[in-house]
Image (cartoon, rainbow, N blue to C red; front, side):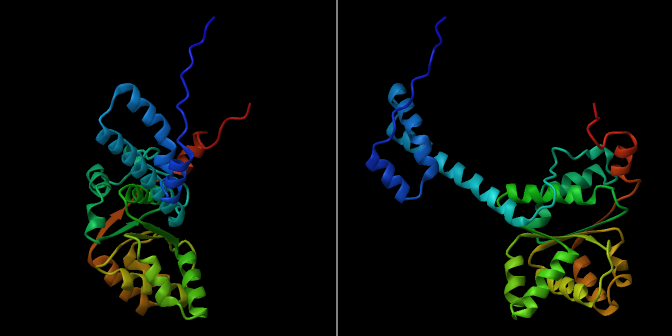
Length: 260
């Protein structure tokens, strides 16, 4: 039995490969042998060859940029809209669709999602964050505890301003799970600094088991009031309801792979 084999495209000449390496075009360099072989066999116009090769380089760079931004964002669990069950969410479908357009991010508007644990707040927001990155923008993801730690480290060496500036380079900044643990003066100050820095400049999204209007019950009142005033001025406020989706899955036996 004869097995047909596809001819291997000849490698690039060493001097050309060296030039492309020097010019830092790794994706064009990798695609070039196959593209050039196809171009010869199909008699492509030279401009088409150039277009295909440059498009491959652009595609590779875009993918690498998205991967780097996803890693830098610090997203928690890799949850996207592929695993999001919109029908199980208490967030109205039109609201889900409108937020998924990301137009609010372009307008530097905020998002506050509050509700009981397990009602999809973090999953939905992380899915939005992945879409923001896919749209060519940047995300910075924190819990209130990790934000407080980052600002605390910056306070030691006097670099709070630089740290806040670095964080707010992202078009979307997230503070997840506010209210899960007690918050003191340091957390309130860190949160206020971030809210103030992003106000009308960047989109800030928060999730919490309590409504932002109640943040003064977990933070010093003066700082909480000032932060919430700025947070909610240009904010989409969503309240989730219902029982925990995680608990529902667990009691139905869908939380684990069955043991044999």
